[in-house]
Image (cartoon, rainbow, N blue to C red):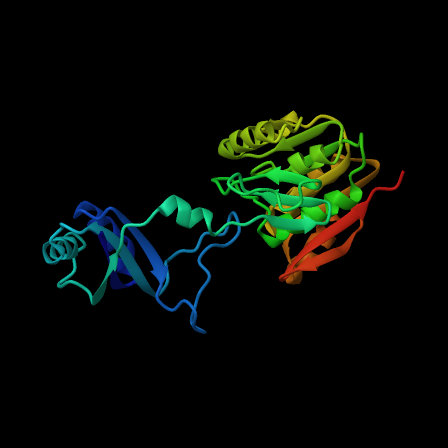
Length: 296
């Protein structure tokens, strides 16, 4: 058994208290928005290049301790290290021993993309064995099929990838889009991502699925143009990369972009207007997929 201790902290004290708790014997510490679930809740994670200057005004610092730790002593020590006059208001909950692997796995079921395609965690049987089943487990890289933007891109691939076409997955994450393209019969498939961990995950996932795709962590590896280009990243990088991404769409080729909120769609459409005309092709849970075609 363990103890989960939740302490109240203001923005300017939360990080210092978090570090002090680790120094005082905590096994792990996290900082959460104390106003989560209310109209005062504040988003903390923005797009790349937009770093919030401070944490939430009112935070909960949650620390996990072994059951044999003297909490009063540990909390007093942490308060002193953090420069606090006293231990902040806190609550304590018992955390029972559990099969954490089993508990985690139970939260991830197979995901239906279309009648043709499913995303199936390795511990599940495929609900539809004769469909295209991509084995994908939650991991470090983004893209397991559960997020609306990934879902939108996978749907697009099932509708636009024919045997033999070439595909570029720009910002490949877990490699799921490149793997799906391979399963749909695409020919040359390249995935690129600036994160080496994403590239490693993509290669491992492709090997697990028997998908013939090449992955690189540098955009310099992209040579030539592709029949289908898909990019599931975020609005700001999509806009900045518009000339580069659009330049890799072949004559007669098609482009799909996601990671774009509905309210941001026009911003991306305008960024790509000098290169390819885009329009909203689909929307899911507030996110959109933008689609375009380069004339022959």
